[in-house]
Length: 239
Image 1 (cartoon, one colour):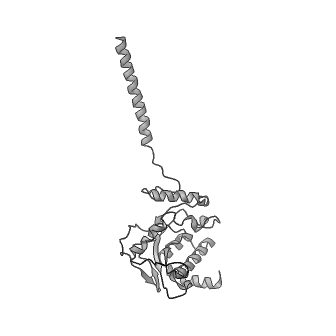
Image 2 (tube, rainbow, N blue to C red):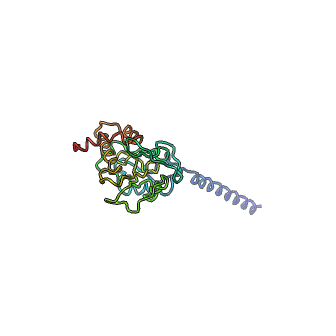
Image 3 (cartoon, helix red, strand yellow):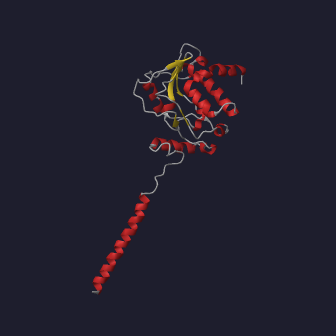
């Protein structure tokens, strides 16, 4: 009898131990799923390994000290385009991207104070969300042949951030388009160089407080060419 009683008590103790251990294990498995710092899990619940690695790269560059992070928020719902489905349009004689393929987007963590921080540069955001290789997919989407030689004086195309990084633009593919030509004019008259002047003008206006950041971001995404006259006058004045 005593041996049977001891055996029963032993079995009960084992069952209790298994129950307690199982509860603890269950709690550990059912706890919150964490993501590496600098990746916004609410904005991007399906963030992949590339984005996670990008966030860590952003930290390693020391850019997080400025208050900015590697984030992206598209202006419209974006679906990866099919090859040749995107079409360049024009405004004031200059090219604009297809609004369905390149709606534009921003990095919501880059505020005016971040842009004014001397330690923050476009290096902090460049290729932090999308690799350089992935950006070249935009040529295929727009049905544009990628130039075999495209550097220095031979540069004809630029994979452009529609909302520029210096205005808190996103580094995601919804904000990337191939801006090409013309190849028969001097370098400073090529379209991407003219847009560069627009970007510098708007960045100066925003940092000085003369223009709201959100307004500048939306307007350059809608039609960057509307700022060409004023940006050209500003460049001539040397402002």
